[in-house]
Length: 112
Length: 111
Image (cartoon, rainbow over all chains, first blue to last red; front, side):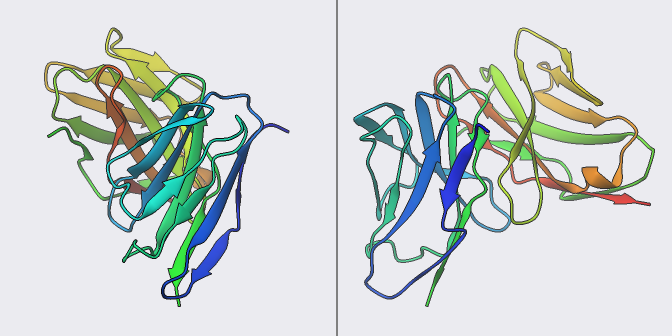
């Protein structure tokens, strides 16, 4: 059953802590993305990757980091430098960059 | 800057009626658009996309209309069902640039 799997569904971060959100896809898509969703706002791009071992900053990359060591995986780390991390985080993938993105089920990150 | 938005934050329709959800964009060079459906607590689900060389595209019970003259696109859902209740949002892009996402319209289907 092909798709994008995000884990965990809920995550809590303590002050000064780094947390990592997992994203795995078995769709054989080259491009992968991380978006942040806040209430009343459109999705905002954090990072994206068009190919393994390469990634680019999106509009709100500060306080986040990513890696793309495998085609199937694109984990996102929310660092302690991100002062307002509470949001719904969405991972997506696509065959062609910026076309027909398919999204995972999301991770809700909250601050303790 | 580039923007993509939606006309109405909420829309209520009677079950069985047709729904029309609207979206406006600012950049006349935008050439690719997507519509997504998002249910509460879930990730967005792809509905349909359209390129600027087309005015209309149809899917299963959905039609997207693109009016480049007034920079407007709409999503029409035929015979709306309770399962169609969700937030719908559009996204657009220009060339190879990143997608811009609108804020969404919450569609409520009244049984």
